[in-house]
Image (cartoon, rainbow, N blue to C red; front, side):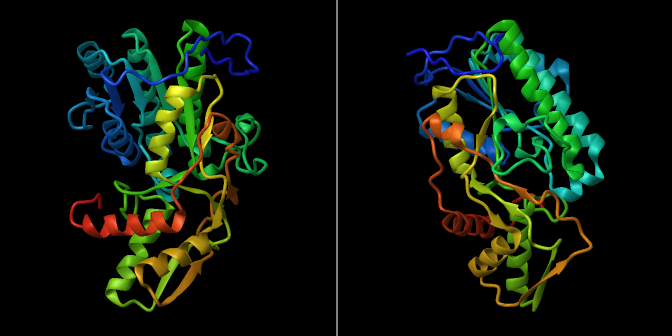
Amino acid sequence: MTLTTPTSDSRDQVDFTSGPLERTGTFYVAGHRGLVGSAIWRRLHAEGFTDLVGRSSADLDLKDRDAVFAFFAETKPRYVVLAAAKVGGILANDTYPVDFLSDNLRIQVNVLDAALKYGVERLLFLGSSCIYPRLAAQPIREDSLLTGHLEPTNDAYAIAKIAGILQIQAVRRQYGLPWISAMPTNLYGPGDNFSPAGSHVLPALIRRYDDAAKNGASSVTNWGTGTPRREFLHVDDMAEACLHLLEHYDGPEQVNVGTGRDVTIREIADTIAQVVGFTGTTEWDTDKPDGTPQKLLDVSKLAEAGWTAQIDLTAGLRSTVEWYRDHADTIRQ
């Protein structure tokens, strides 16, 4: 069956046949030790892929162009998921914009250029929902891209990811390859970064409330007002969605991946406090930034492609807290 995905770009003439990827094909997961990459690796292994390839940042610096090309020349992957990126929360993004822009641009360009040279058949580029305008209409549709100003606390990271989307579209137009992009909402789950300075909001809250519960603290202080609304997707759901898109979706437009439901930061903080057993009070430091007021993705394109999220938020939080406690001595600090 040949998919004919509607597109506003008449220059995109890619032919793609929907169906299972070859389980014996060499599959490179860039960033296989990160939150998303490790979940994708687990999913692919469970689905019977027998030739998975991954390299740690110590073994392969994706910012080193020569090293990346040498790696592709050696392994010649048939499939690639580009999940490697420099990531962080509001504080890290706002403090080190040069690092987030430069590092991510180099990683993306090196991997995508090498994948093109060595004939990667199917590639999925992963971005972030922060690519959309700060005040985009909610829920955010894919066609909201480049229609307004970005959130200033993470604009450098967002610009890098937007460049990746455009490079995927350019490869499709110029070379006719069925490469695609997916933009996940806020992710959480096993393998996350729980460091105080570098983590995103949900793992930061898990650590903060769990520490408070263990230490018998009477209160916890969080950034901002607690009113911004956020959508959260378990990373195992994300991994399943990635494989589904690789096997069933084709088109130049990025695909939003999320649940289609959001909660306030205050609500998620209360839920985490309950899950970890914290019984004290929560204070809010309103001198600290809130970030984007709301970020809820329109996931109708994903639903049309035949996939919806399955993992309940509270159940996902419970399993994530259990994982965090089981790995407290070895996780990223």
